[in-house]
Length: 306
Image (cartoon, rainbow, N blue to C red; front, side, top):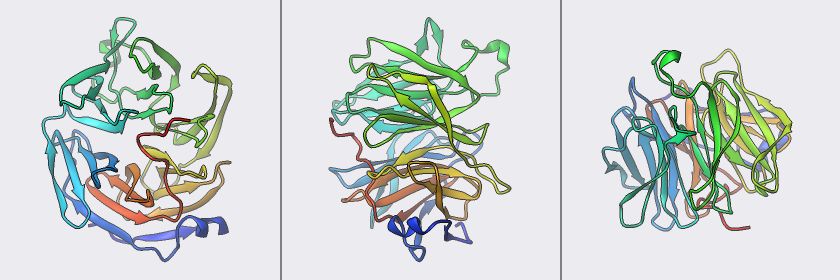
């Protein structure tokens, strides 16, 4: 289990979000491996449990508070990021199949996206659904295959309409686009670049694409300690939560660093809000699942129509 846990306060505003004396819980470990870590924590609100990916072991795990962890589904095509659409269906970024897939309510699978302009996607990583039902996902290249064997020559961020009929490349100048999240009013889309160690922010245009002229670095999370930007979430007041050097960082809506949850693991791979009141922050590292209580609720999943 990780050690050296603490909550570091960098600004007084942090106390409105999490108490510096709050306990950081270790819930389970032993996940992950060379082919991928624990990832994608997703709270299933109506049933009161958390799903998360164990990429290396090709499993989807289920955590029930008070009861522990069990295998929920296998195989999963080594799925990574998870979310739900407006109908409550599970959407997963699958590494082995190089696609984004939707699990229908009857258990069948619908392919959301597996190619762009006739070329196979790289390795979809993380995904979020907007309140209009559009699906946004990142598609970095994280495989040992040499560049000449890539189908696409770039790492992309994409938008897909709810009917799955239109797929748009939003931006292609990231080295390794990873986590992504909307501001509470969905006027801003945050996307982080694990390789560059920072989060970028874009204003969202009325048609759902990105206003590229508004591209700015929201926060730089590099440092001397292990950890890079990976999964990312936002609470209802617009604070942004993301892994980075040394732990899980909390920033306000302007990018000011308020504090850091130092959970003791080498890297924060992803996070998600849960609990009956959306005030439990679950997080995964390379091989473990943890949680900490937060004072401000996270944005619910599925999103509520605006």
